[in-house]
Length: 87
Image (cartoon, rainbow, N blue to C red; front, side, top):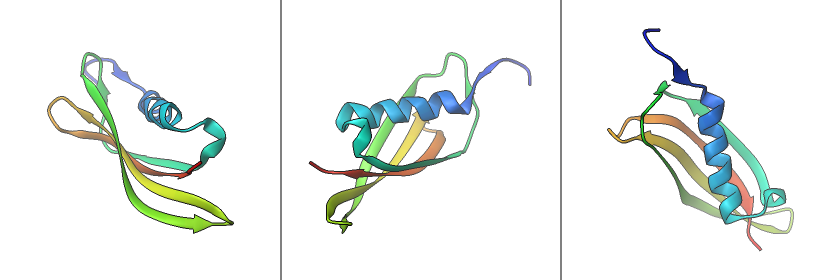
């Protein structure tokens, strides 16, 4: 590689923080990602989440989210999903 880059787990941690800023950690029932592209040092990264499904599971009201990190140029760096319980 011509230069250093950020580890993919750093981007996953940023998405984890996005989730825990919205719900308490015990409300997260699932969280998975796919690493799509290298994040280079100095890139501005935006974390996003969107509710794509509402459902009930085991007596709990849940939502499924699409989550992603994207560079300032619009390139997806990480994509995945999370399932959280609503209070």
